[in-house]
Image (cartoon, rainbow, N blue to C red; front, top):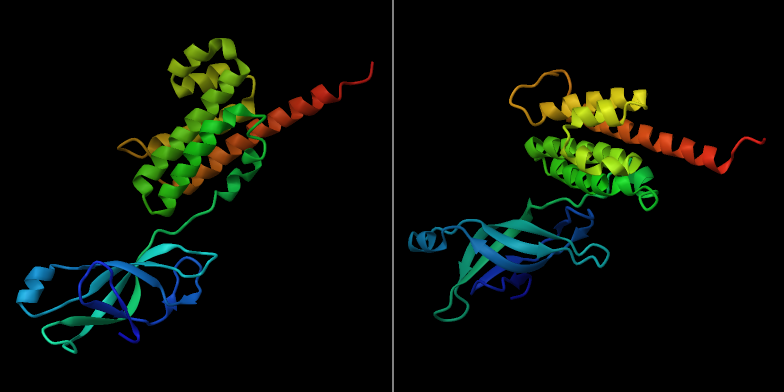
Length: 245
């Protein structure tokens, strides 16, 4: 049918070839359509009232090819072919999509040195997943994820510094690791304590720090990671450039 695209899984269903803006690349496109869902189709058919159609769509842009859902309005029913009903839908618009988010920019310095700093590995993975949850507005679980990322960062760093105490560090409460295993780094200790306080607020029923939120938690976690990286860079340059005798 000219000017319409057939929906693959629904017999006699067509959607008009209207252009819309891809929610991923923002280009004006006529989307590639696949399967569709007609809400309560049997009930509405018997009542002779058709409603909106939800269709899987893909951006045709070769540099995008991202998926999303569109919603189309019921327009009319055609009988161009004897004993065959064709249902036409029009005015497609974006119904739902999950935005693709890049790696959080604040992790870039640590991704660049991850191979030589093995204690970043789990931290980067957990933080990135928590960042994705936050971007999907899953705030209740994102905060818990950031708290977990902090614990892995601090414990893995403590194990890196004191490998002979690995088992004890793994089993210890995070507060003890901060106060005992990292006590030689006072700035790190103070930042880690505060990050832990806010992280605990994301996991406990009552919030202690009412004027702080997940953004403050993330800032403190990155400040903690920055302090660790600064410490390691200082050690590296002092080792590579010993004072002349």
